[in-house]
Amino acid sequence: QVQLVESGGGLVQAGGSLRLSCVASRIIFSINSMAWYRQAPGKQRELVASITSSGWRNYADSVKGRFTISRDDTKKTVYLQMNSLKPEDTAVYYCNRVPVLPAWGQGTQVTVSS
Image (cartoon, rainbow, N blue to C red; front, side):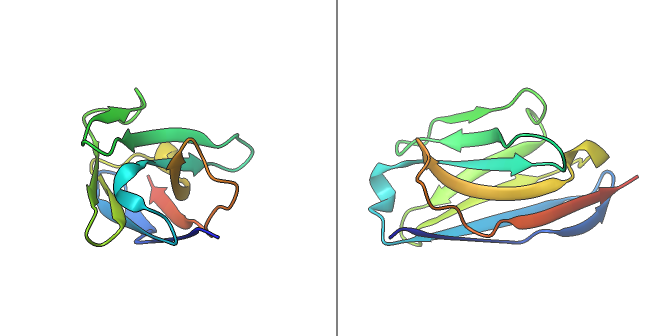
């Protein structure tokens, strides 16, 4: 079964930055599109950013120009650099494949204070 382990979250003031990491195991990482998702309290999980195996990136409108997704296939790791963070970015962040796999990781909490 695929395992996804997210890290890098924390508490940051508005305008600050964080870099999230997600290590995937038991998956042929290099051929898969990967993505970051987030779920805020009381809201549905949403797609934040995705990256294909060839490096094409796509972002939700709410994070364009502030977040950057990248990947290192040698480390089976996908990253999310988050700059100019806003309180509305507060959520638990998860990584998964595109399309998603049934098993999700534990996520990493991002809290942005105003």
